[in-house]
Structures are given as C-alpha cells and as structure tokens.
Image (tube, rainbow, N blue to C red; front, side, top):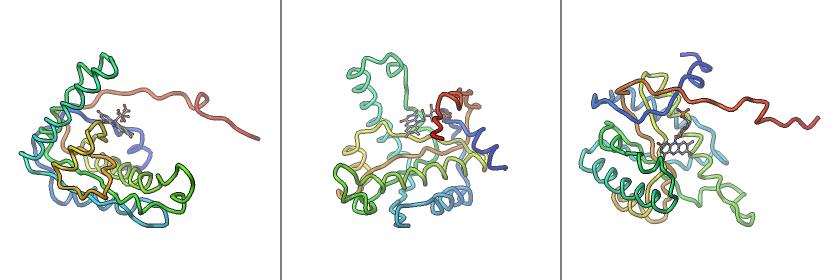
Length: 190
Ligand SMILES: Cc1cc2nc3c(=O)[nH]c(=O)nc-3n(C[C@H](O)[C@H](O)[C@H](O)COP(=O)(O)O)c2cc1C
C-alpha cells in the first residue's frame, strides 16, 4: 500500500471481528513500531501483547468504570453512550510501556521530560499505519486508570503505561472523520 493511501485511509476502529490476527501480521505491526524514531535512539518502548480473553475482559471492566467516572466528572453526553466492548472483543491489545528515565536531555529542563512518551507515540502511529496496510483495524486507546491497568497487566511500578493499541479485523468499515483545512492549521512566518 502506498504511504499516502495508508495515512489518509487509516481510521480508528471500535468494532472488531473475533477472527484472530495472524502471528506474521502481529509481528509486522511490532516491527513497524521498532523502526519508529526515538529520543537519542533510546527505543524506550516495551510492548505487552495481550491475547488472553480473561485479561481483555478485566481491561474492559476496568475501562468501563473509568468511562463512567469520566462521564460523571465531565458531564459530556457522548461518554454516556461510549462503550468499550471492543476491548474484550478485539483479538489483540498491545500495551505500550516505557521507563520515564529513558527521556532525552529534555528531562533536565524544568517541567519537561516527556520525550520518552513522544517516542512511544511515534511507535504507536507506525503500528496504526502498518495495521491498516495489512488490512487490520486498530485503535489508539488511552481512557484507562493507569494504576489499575498496570496492576492487571503486572507492569512494574517504574514503568509508565503510555498507551494501548487495540488490533483486529474490523467488524464493519469505520466511518469517515473530517479534518480541519490546512489553512486553519498553518501559520507561515516568512
Ligand atoms: C493520543 C490519542 C489518544 C486516543 N485515545 C482514544 C481513546 O481512548 N478511545 C478512543 O475511542 N479513541 C481514541 N483515540 C482515537 C481518536 O478518537 C481518533 O484518532 C480521532 O477521532 C480521529 O479519527 P480517526 O483515527 O478515525 O482518523 C485517540 C487518538 C489519539 C491520537
């Protein structure tokens, strides 16, 4: 698949078929992550690949509680309708963790040190694009209670849970999502 096609056609998927993801495809998605840029080439990312149904169910239950909390806290109506059944339904969830000590020199600047997480985000984007190129659906997922999910997944205390990536074959084609026009986003300083 052409790069531009992958960038423009990838959409977040929130409804997955239970069809398993082939090991070669999963490996290709992780291989794409491995080649992402990272601060000082530290490659801070670690990937926990979750296929276990009981664990996925526990993640879903934990995240459902988090969504309910967010609904109450924000009053945002869409959170009342937002369901995270896809966490139990999708065949694979990849938790992306990293040691915040693996930031670059930015960690010595006051209030900074986020480059380890930025590096992980580059890896996540590579995963989403690779998944799409392989005919898989994916979702970048972040609405979780970090401490609770780290406990469920046995993530060591010093590691940050940067994101989760949900992967599987789409059950239905994801809808289209608009983008702001470039003129609205761009300032040129001549
Ligand atoms: C940093 C980040 C966090 C996100 N977290 C969530 C999430 O927790 N749950 C979710 O359903 N979508 C999440 N998304 C997906 C966005 O909602 C989605 O990318 C956006 O609506 C644009 O749609 P598209 O991905 O189909 O182009 C996240 C995306 C990013 C980049």
